[in-house]
Image 1 (cartoon, rainbow, N blue to C red):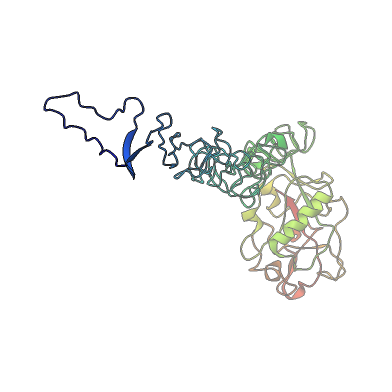
Image 2 (cartoon, helix red, strand yellow; image 1 turned 180 degrees about the vertical axis):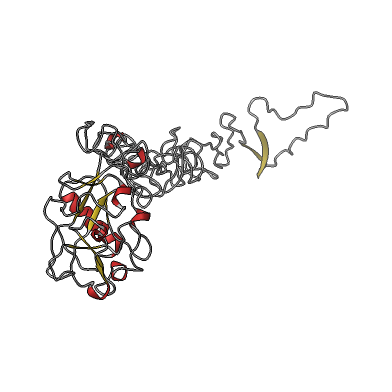
Length: 423
């Protein structure tokens, strides 16, 4: 049986808009020939507009939020991201790792952080607070030598050493009690009478660096009657009272001067005039005689007439017996009484050998009765047991009291006494 041929649609007439077109309004599908015996098969190409995906099975692309610091995810360009705003932990809110010098104190790791790496301020480059003793000068520190030694120029308090700080600067200060004390002057020198610094705590009333017209050598005021002889204040004596009934007047003027022959005997080697003076002074003090005593001796440099005080008051023995009315009377060649009494009021000693065969109380002099030198030198300046010996006689009241024997008849190896006269 033969099939009728397929109907062919007629071509639309010009201007005819009633031509039938594929209906896409209901399903959006189009039709295609399958080639299967002319049968027509529909193929779906619909798009799921609810998801934007097509039916090809391709995965959908992400459309979430953009990367940001603080989202807890370390994104490119971030050193860290802990998802919080705490600036005291290892990750700052700016997503950079905490480090010394960032101006934020990393709790548990940094004690300070001033935002720089300068060592000479209050927070070091290691984020450690600056402190006295760290060897770095900062804040109100005057110095910082990095040690706790208080004996050098920088104290452990980081202040410069200075007198009055209460710490002795070794090699510079003798003491430092933070001010004047009984043992330390305000200038940090040891408190010593005669140092020129008045230290009342050390018991000083004055200190002129030694005796003066107003200050005694013991740093007390120079006053008549205080028992301290003050020649610069015009005192000739000071027996500790203001009586006129003794040897020293109420104006500390001598009413007489003592003269004696020594109880001790010496060779001609006396240690010079100084040694002889010291011997006189020692015996006078031991006997309780006040004043300054010189030996009646001459050497090749000086004699009593040049170095003695020429008294205008009487010279008396330790017993009070008057020898001469004054200096002029002493050196006129005749004494009122022989100088035959010792400092302890005893008789003049007689050496076992000497002028007169060891029977006379001889005395070393090398001095004429008028107080001038007898010869060029006695016993080589009173320093040897050899040389020319010249002696006086302690029992004589004429010129022989000072000029008795000399030359070959005498020996410097002998022993003899000395005349001692208060100045």
